[in-house]
Length: 288
Image (cartoon, rainbow, N blue to C red; front, top):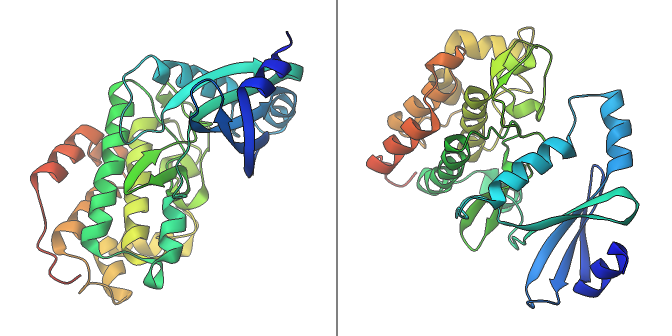
């Protein structure tokens, strides 16, 4: 029986969810177990054409390697659980994963007053993101596209997903400028060789900053970007103060942002060290 027939018999489309770079994502019912799952379909023909034009876009072959690795590991609460993968008819790679009904963290912020969260809520969500990143890093996986848009939200739980730019080779060469502009570390933006683990930590810092302030730090961390140059000169504490938010964010949290948003990647904490700190501390945030 053709794979396309097996797919149609096992998975019943409930509704389309979105259009990804190389194909649709849909909500399906798995007839074998009755569970509702999300399935991403990836046209390998479209992927080959896109990668020829730009090698720094989502790479399904790298994603397959990481997804296969994750499927051999015990599921982690803060990482999307992959249920399976297979090659469908006509060169389409299908990834079956858990469905997160709450959208992503960007959606959550858009529903919040002034598009930002109280510090205590932001820290709660951020801690979950760090747990997920620490799990990935501990197994040799760098995400390279951490963003609020790639952290899904399901009944109060954050789950890191979308591994299209992820890698199990964290030391990257010159010119691999991948990720979303708001979240990219300076060394990535400026086309330097970089440690993808350290770049992930910068991206976590930007995610936390946006949750707390409702706005990205700068449009990008390019050395010619005036806003970024001002941040380099002033530091994150003065940026927050100049935005009139210093009374809403504790000094401890500002200090944490300062550590994550260090220009020198070596000075940023590892995911493990950051998680240990977060698990051991609770800032005095009052009514923030």
